[in-house]
Length: 383
Image (cartoon, rainbow, N blue to C red; front, side, top):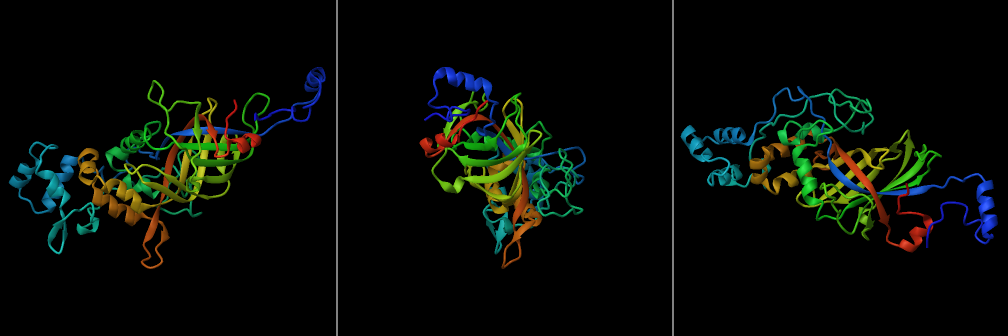
């Protein structure tokens, strides 16, 4: 069944001539519509600038490994021998991988990050970061959002990771490793789709201010790339059947910017190469509805920090060699900077404030019951 957007339902049985006269005589009635999108990018929001790491950026892999080997008590000749042919030296990898110690015996440090002392990686001490004031407080360790000017912004994930070269960027650039994580997985993992219900447009076609509902779901299939390698617009996606990946929140549109008016829990499956799942609490969204029909904005909230560590630890030595990250150092930084949801027994915070860039292109989104959703006018975009 096709969805009617005008007065056709009222004049269903009128003769064609009267129908035309009525259409010309009656004022147009605004009808709310639902727009569909597919997420094209989702990655940690980085706002890197000179001087935000006053203790220095964390070293590249070769310098990091020399420091690690010295800390293990290796002599200079031993270090030179292990570093020979870096990064392809076969003897170096097992040494750094098993640099942890439990009961005096070497253990895999990625599986047992507490088996070595905290290496105290350099963390961000700048004043600007994307995100939201999640706790309603303004403290000396909070950021200011460079886009909105909001103070008290909580984004400890960027603080923890933002002094690694491969986690740094200033928009419109994207941080290297988060870019790789998303780009390498989106050809296989089911796409994320967005629907904004309740949109009204003015006579000029511009989106009007007003209240809407935004939903984010997991589709049954992946994106399709265009000739440039970007996600193709105007493709059709079917919402997946698992209600676990359904996320919905009330929002408002003002001057072309959608902002959620209540926090919500964001749960979404990703790919084990990146983060197996996102389970973000107290989530907020700020999305620009761009004239070309695309979306771009920020999602913020509190994310469990252990899955973030696992995404680095699963490919521990590979990540250290290729990304110049100190994996146990990330564990300690995430644990130290976690700022919400304390464990009731240990008191250790289990979640860390985070912010993510989210971008989307127009798409047709079909819900699980196409006949019913067509009656409601849901699951499509109209331009």
